[in-house]
Image (cartoon, rainbow over all chains, first blue to last red; front, side, top):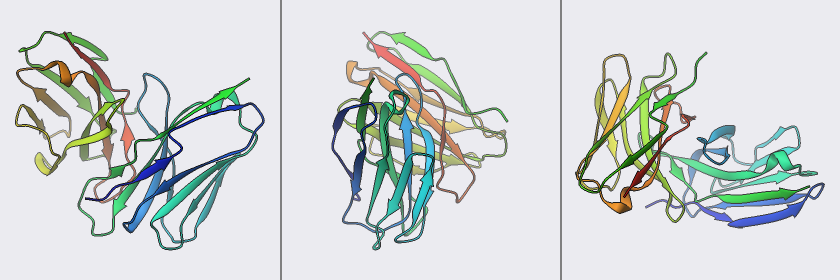
Length: 112
Length: 112
């Protein structure tokens, strides 16, 4: 069974600080997505990374896919209260035709 | 373009009852997946439908079932509800073969 481990589970920081959250597995994924979920809402897709070593930027958010396509990281620069939420990573099995594997998420709280 | 619509948003049921949840995917998306989300277990895959056929099934008891209609709308049913079925049920739609999932707001089911 493929597993995605996310760390840390919880993170509480002050506005303006930088942070990095991690998504790790022993399995290879053909792609990996990051989602953000706010309380009472469904997850919203932020980005998809496909190529090993790929880096994608979305404003203050930087996403990286590991060279071996087994792990990923999300770095937020100068966090704002609006960044608060549950960050989920999800991996697509390299063999295809199987459901996405989700990590349990990192719950981020940015305090003004 | 309209997003994924789930109805109802909130539901309170009694143990032993059954419940049906509905999901209308984004127009053009023919793949629909269902997930159960709880604080302890995170997002757990229930099943995926494409062209009215179940393509994948998660590790849930037979009390959980689903179906998809010719217009790609999907329903899931839970019979003989248990307290442990209390959760946020999320539906996600996607283009076939595309791992990027677009989620609805979810149905919050409470079993008392």
